[in-house]
Length: 294
Image (cartoon, helix red, strand yellow):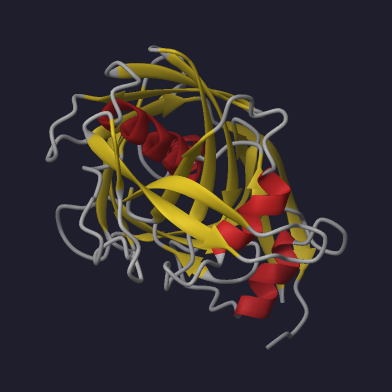
């Protein structure tokens, strides 16, 4: 099967975008992995599938598949690329759209300068809904909120360790740890072990947060099913929410990831939505022959 695609990126987080507004392509997990492969496919952190609205009151639906082929709930940088894609392709002339994702509806808006703002919804702190199972561990009080100690077993050349993480969901699960310097943080030693920790039955995105001042942070994220990416939109939201609840950050924060800068805003109320703003760019369009993989 030969298909058309668009390669896009938001702050270095890159995507293959597929237009399924006419009919679903019905790709297998193996075919998503092929598309994401940087040697044999197109190469991407995630695959975005654009589909028609499933019901009145919505503009579109879109599906997100990680580089490992698994479907996931949410992606902030992908949502911004989605908005740019449907506008550039003439699929809508609206500057504000409502879109169905796996766990609900998100609202996206495009500014005249091309930056896209995503209403990411309210953060989720209920442990069962994240989901997070403390497995008998007790939280540690920090700045009016709490951190959870995670015991990480030894792996290969990496010794056993305990890390303290803030746990929440932005439509997908996140564990955020505070570090002094993201450049020297052991992201690749700890990230995979946090991602697959048994306390997270659906695995988790592992964020490593350096607070520069109350309005600026640096962040690296080891994403569930993708490894470390140049930026993670939902991870940026989770990190800022965690920093605000821990008393370290103000309501508007610039997040500096390795691939670019995102602006995150959260008023601090448990029902208040998180807003993420940043760039989204088309890299190129192409066609590729997809083998029959199962």
